[in-house]
Image (cartoon, rainbow, N blue to C red; front, side):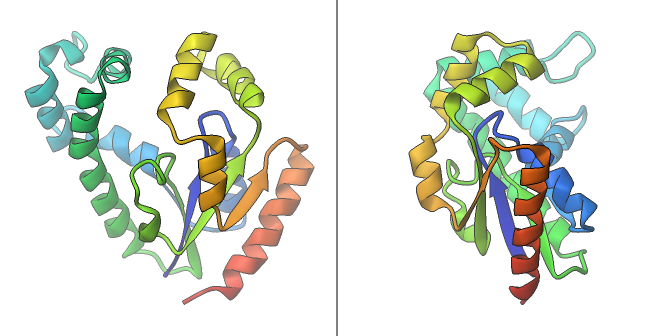
Length: 197
């Protein structure tokens, strides 16, 4: 099956684009949704995280405290790598498992860290959702209630906008209206239908 990797920086609008493809009956697999499921209580990934980071990354009810874990990994590149070594193989294995059950001309796989994880070869086509950094900050601030320095720390932990664009097979400009976004999605949908394998 033809696999399109949907990626982009935080606040670029990947979710909106994914939803527009869903409206065209395209199956969408979301790596973030998979990651959340993998760290649910009693799941293997959560146990591995506890083994590495200790019980201080848990809430009082035994769930993963994402805020604490985020703080740890943004301040310690070694621990960030350790978390990635736990999560990424499990995430990609689950994506593969889900793809194998699908019957469709192509699948859209939303992978925010596709380029950061150097997994470009996992998909046949890289679709980047792009917007200026100032717009990313504005969107994340209104969505996640983070301050500028927290948002910039996340942006700086991802590949640069220039690097992401250099890896793109197609680019969606998300500075336009929703109608403009829909036009771009419809155009790419027609293109991907012709690429079916």
